[in-house]
Image 1: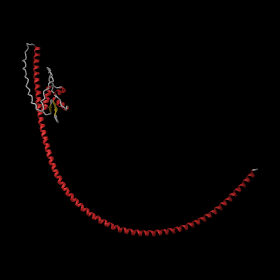
Image 2 (image 1 turned 45 degrees about the horizontal axis):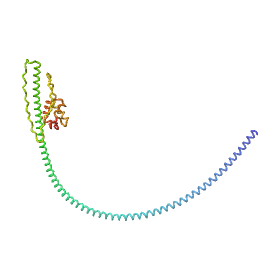
Image 3 (image 1 turned 180 degrees about the horizontal axis):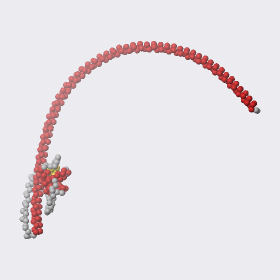
Length: 317
């Protein structure tokens, strides 16, 4: 086939297709017009039905509202009547309760006044009884306190007498020790003088100017204190510490405060210390220790009990 024939065939088919499309469009438009008319008829019918339903509903609603209004008016009249009746009954009940409460209040006031009167009488009686008991208790307490004070005064006097006797005994014992020490010192001086005389003779010979022989020093007699029945006087230490020999030609150093050293040592030893312990611990001789202890006893800073020296309470050097 030639190209012209094909083109003619194609144009003929095209015209057929266009005609079919135009015919189909006309059919669709007719169908749409028909359906639109039917829809309009249905809408009109539905609108009439809705109008009739709305009118019927309005009529029923008005009837229901009228019935409800009538019911509310009836209930309101009934409620008003009930409230008026309840108010009257409440007034009567309140009047009765007020009357009963006033009667009970009057009775309670009378009972309270009677109880207060009874309480006042009981309180006055209790006050009188308590005053009598308190007066008796104060008198008993004063008697007991007076007796206790008398007992304390008696014990204090006995303690003062015992303490005074103890101090006299300690002083007497210290005097005995001091006298013994001075006797030992006299013997030591005599021995030292004899040694000096012998040394001078051995060095300078018999022809040298002789120093007169030292006069022997008599040992003083020591008076012993009379012991009491309760305690015995302390005896001198049987083993006295040997005295150091003085160095010839050496200058005596300045004496340290022995009293302060001894007092501090006794303060550090609450149980007390003996004479030999003080000498050994402080490195002093018997004369220094005895002199310091005697001075401290005279100042009433320390006391001696059973050959042991103690610091007085609240003593300050």
